[in-house]
Image (tube, rainbow, N blue to C red):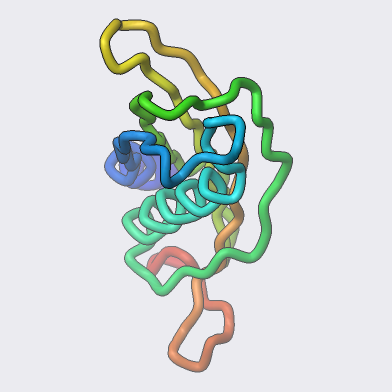
Amino acid sequence: MDAIIEELIKKSETRIFKAVFPNTTNHYETLFGGTALQLMDEVSFICATRFSRKKMVTISTDKIDFEKPIPAGTIIELVAKVTKVGRTSCMVKVDIYKEEMYSYDREIAVSGHFKFVAIGNNKKPVPILDSE
């Protein structure tokens, strides 16, 4: 079973790239924290869904670290990966990397964890993997 889970984790890793435009920044010309959280929730949802192939809902977030500001005019990459699997839930780690648009400079800017639960049509938790 562990080999199957490891393969599902590997196949479900999800990456999204975005350009940071002025309409997504605050008065300091850096990415709004709320926009970063929305993007992180979206990419983690896609990752959890790709992992389980079930209806997934966010049930919590864990510590979100805003390590570096993300200025307008940069490219960001969001990387989501399942880090823990329970009976009905999974934890997804999301890192946002920022890249200078016209150089190869790249560094981690934001990271956090999102917990998802698999639900059935009745909106009640169901086993995240069919083999359970």
